Every structure is written in structure tokens, then in C-alpha cells.
Length: 101
Image 1 (spheres, helix red, strand yellow):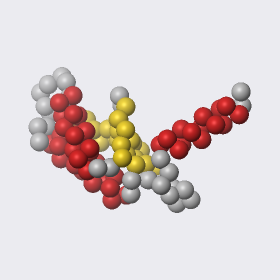
Image 2: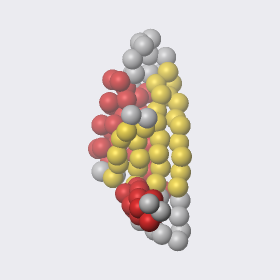
Image 3: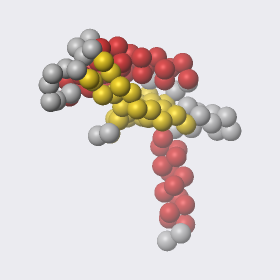
């Protein structure tokens, strides 16, 4: 399972949310799940339970200093290719692009 998500702290009274996002990323990392962060969010690779636990940990970390947190999530659940990673998906697209050139 792949889950891309981002957290948005609300009500911190600050124009910057980088401290809360950093805490969220530390919490995700502490779960041990495979993940990769880009400027817009974080991609998780794991089981349903692992992904949900990592997102909950991220939300709980944000709530330590913000009264509210909003999540944006995208789920990719496949039964025909268990264990597919983000790198697998990118490799597949790259191979198809190379074949067309």
C-alpha cells in the first residue's frame, strides 16, 4: 500500500508551520515505516495498519503544539501487486517513456 499525505497545522498563531511539520516527520520516522518526503507531502509504503499508525503519529505530533490538524491523503491499494513501492511505479513510467522515444 502507498499513501501520500500532508498535514496542515491550524491555529498556531504563526505564519510558519515548519516546526510542527518537522515534529510530524520525526514521528513518522520513529514508526520505522518506509517513507519519502517531498515539498508537498510524504509518501508512506507499508501495510494498511503501518500507514495508519504513521499518519496518526504525525497528527498527534502536530497536536502537541496546534489545536487542530488537517490531513490531505491519497491512497493506492493494490491486490495484484502486493508490496509495490513508489520506486517501482516510477521505474514503470520511466521504462514506458523510454520505449516511446
